[in-house]
Image 1 (tube, one colour):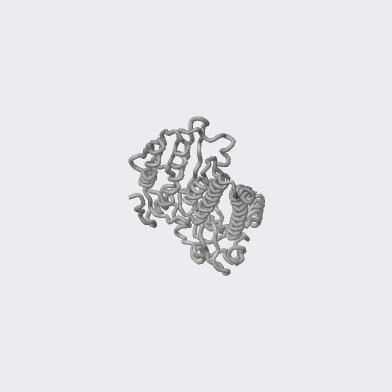
Image 2 (cartoon, helix red, strand yellow):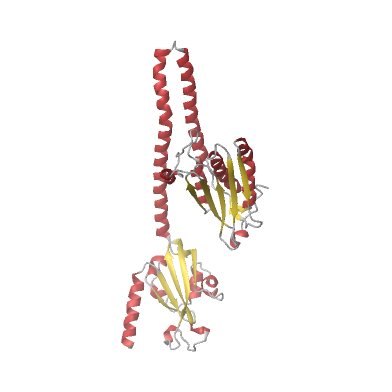
Length: 381
């Protein structure tokens, strides 16, 4: 039996030593009894140099608060999972730390720090696992750069397409001018066509500049009710002119968001404008803020009663320059998506042909930790 236990112990150590993670095991007195080889890649020291040292001192030396890592288990939680930056010989390094209690058997061997007694707190040691995030962050940055380059390529192709079409019309019309200089009707028609196509090019460029100048959000504690009411108020007159009535609903209490009020107003205005334009013969645009007590997200729904989005077009709704409107630029919904994503939120839609479309924005509520760190927004007041 003892041989079998020793064999299993060897297998376990072999397994732990093959991982890129650093695994530290401490006994009930806080002495480190085992460290895997991954510690050398992260901290630059051999596993043996840590054995028998106090785990609290080791954590403190590398910049991890021992209290946060080891002591906060009175609430009954089994482990702690945090991303921290630690100090190593090579400088600072981002890691993920997972710590959990390890319960020793009543008959634990002396070297493990077991003291016996089934109900004795001294039975508990700790397991601390460190994972190096440096390579993962580097891979993520490389992926983001690749995605940005791909997006630039797609954007360039889309811009070229949007500008090439009106230029082709202008080129064709211009080629006829030398032969029809005496044709007054043609020249008048040409001037109208040229002006219209140049307006198309200018609208594309202006929208693109607006999209590219979008700044990073300035996050503050924000009242989403005020934001939604402001957006509805700003666009209500345009709605009335086109026969669209805006109905707004919001519960009495909605928690604050950590958000940029101006950006959210812009996003909601785009959705409201979209909804109004989807009902050219008039109708009702329903705007509703929803939140259930305890929920992590606030939901804003914008529902029109228009013709709906054809099934074959739904996969393209958030693509840049995709539009079904004659005067549209196809940048409104991509901008909405960008703003919402930058607020750690989600935007989606439901559409039924002949019955209308509902755009749904979900935004995270202000957490307790954020509440003490953010300013209070006056947007919409």
